[in-house]
Every structure is written in structure tokens, then in C-alpha cells.
Image 1: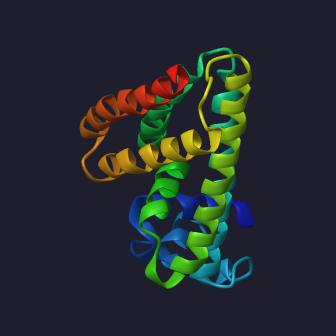
Image 2: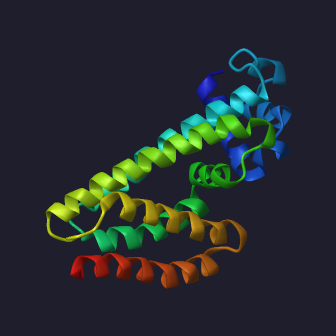
Length: 195
């Protein structure tokens, strides 16, 4: 039995039931092995969970970068606005997205520091990538006087803020907040362009 199969099944359990609600017995049962066999690959539940979380954040990072690269010809406003639909779709269709979003806001208490390191590294990397993307569009003339670092940080803050609605109340409230907040964010950037 491969460690990858155990990881993938554990990912599904952690995404659906969280860290606390997932059991190694149930994971082993679904894999088709005895619980003791998991210890051939992982030191225990914490090790398995952290392996899954690291994998999820690397996987989602690649997915997000591909999203922005695949829409390279679209204006930056469209890319940023459409990203919210990309997040919502992932949350409802992908265990990796679901687990990533939950870990950003609700890491298990006993692993909070380790998960927070993974989350913070991911967010810092996404902010740098967003800054590069915005710089590319600024060089194309889509931004004029915008401070790219501030624009990227403000966008990530907006994303963080509306994701809470997705986690707690669902798609409708999520898009209601996006549809109110994004135009105000964009007007702020447009106002800088005119100064």
C-alpha cells in the first residue's frame, strides 16, 4: 500500500470531517488496510495530517498560478473578479480547496503553529505572485499610479474577508459580498490611476 493512497484518502476525510472528526481507523478501513499499516508510512495522525496539509497547499498554489496564467490575455480587473468564482467552484467541487480554506481559518488547535507556518508561507507566496501579475498588467498600461504591493495586499485582504461567508453561509452570501466589495476595491485602484 502506498503512502500516496493513504494520503489521498486521508485528504478526503480531513476535508469532510476536519482533523478532530477524522479517525485513522476509518481512513485505514477505506484504504483497505489495518490501522497499524498506516504507521509504516506515517508516525501518527499528526504526521499524516501535516503531510496532507503540505500537499494541499502546494497543489492549490499550482492550481491558482495556472488559473492566472491561463487567462493571461484578459484584463487584470476581469482576472481578479473571476477569481472569486474560481474559489467558490473549487470549494464546492474539490477536497483540496475545501481543506485549504478551512485550514486558513480553522487549523486544529494542537497543530495551529505548524499549520499557520504553512498558511503564512502560502499567502506570502500568493501575494508575491499577485504582485508580479499586477506588475505585468501595469507595464501594459492597465495601472498607472498604483502601488502594486498595496494593491496586492488589499486584494488578498478582500479575498480573506469574503471567504468567511463561503465557509459559514454559502454561495449566495459569498457572491453578495463579492459583488458589493470588489467594485469598491476596483474604484480605489481606478482613483489612484486618475491622480
